[in-house]
Length: 71
Image 1 (cartoon, rainbow, N blue to C red):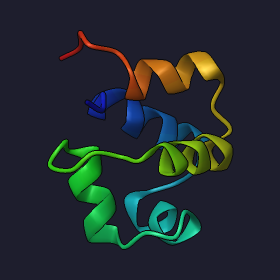
Image 2 (spheres, one colour; image 1 turned 135 degrees about the vertical axis):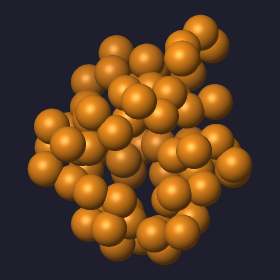
Image 3 (cartoon, rainbow, N blue to C red; image 1 turned 60 degrees about the horizontal axis):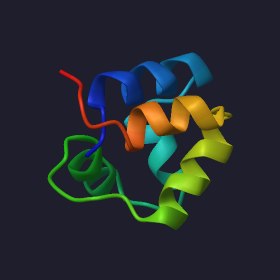
Image 4 (cartoon, rainbow, N blue to C red; image 1 turned 30 degrees about the vertical axis):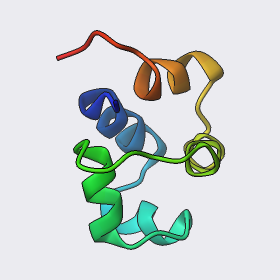
């Protein structure tokens, strides 16, 4: 499950919005929105591309995509 709050913070820090991140990672805006809001799951390759694009550390990636407890 994706930590939506932390994902959005990471996007803002890197200077991206849903509209600018989606094409940067080869995804439609609608699909990205579904995945950020946990209506669909990100694949491993999508997570890797997002990590590279947003310049996330491994710890930040894990907090966003692999944590079990969050609001």
